[in-house]
Image (cartoon, rainbow, N blue to C red; front, side, top):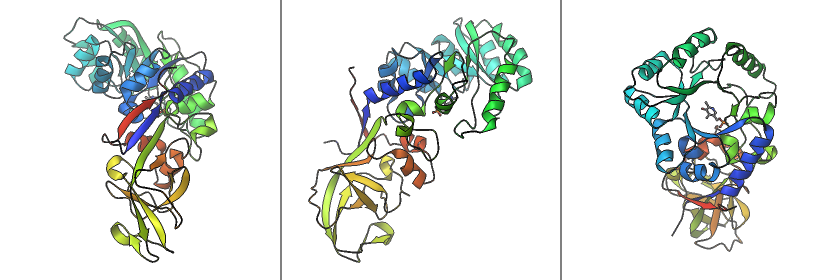
Length: 362
Ligand SMILES: *Cc1c(COP(=O)(O)O)cnc(C)c1O
């Protein structure tokens, strides 16, 4: 029997990709599927999108290997590049597209023990100041890279926006201007936009865009929901009632006795806890959907269970469906109530939560 389950709606995923394309019809799409596709299952997500995107992007070499082994033929960008010589050799052989963001990575490409060739992306530090070469180094690093034997047809340019999720923030304009200026006399494809830039900056038009979170139907903007951007939440996190209990007025429930009932009621115990990735700090009152109606979480979330107040007249039964987040209960406000963003709740979903896939054949 499946208890904790993340149902992934592949039609919603495809609709979100179409929405991203409509934001920027002149850019090819690099679908970001790092972190197991933000918790959604990178193999299934990549198969669903492979015919409609240019390429995929991941954060780690191993994540790219998983996709290749699953038969994904698209180019796969390694967003932070390779982390040692061995990875560099293999990445070239497997024709991954590593980002190059420091001199050590250039040395590994120079010393590669393979005669293979692939394409690379030079990381331009336009203002995030996390990875990449300084603006004045770009011409030199590009020519240094372009002449290496391992380079196939291009060395492209990539940069990342630090404040694109803040509307009307001039930092994005500065980064855009820096990117254009630093690469203006150089040949190669360019890529700058993330989900937030795709949704708000139709003027950021480069060869390729890199949407991540929006593909999964979640907004990058604080205080908003995916639906506000015409995105459809892809994941529905579900579980079941494993107990329904009469509960007396004034009695507490769970660790720390954090909550006491104001009245006689019925409590539902749900097979979902922080061991599944549902945050332990989720407060009393957080909405949970049981049999289609919203009821409050009460008391502390445990490792494997949480409790909800079903109300005195409830006739819910053991085995009934519970929805923790999804289309009917957006993840963004839940994330906000524990001081984080939707990205983190999705990606920290534990492996014991079964992923199942619907609407895959259209
Ligand atoms: C994660 C990531 C993205 C995608 O960002 P979203 O906000 O999820 O759209 C794009 N580019 C780089 C370099 C990233 O690390």
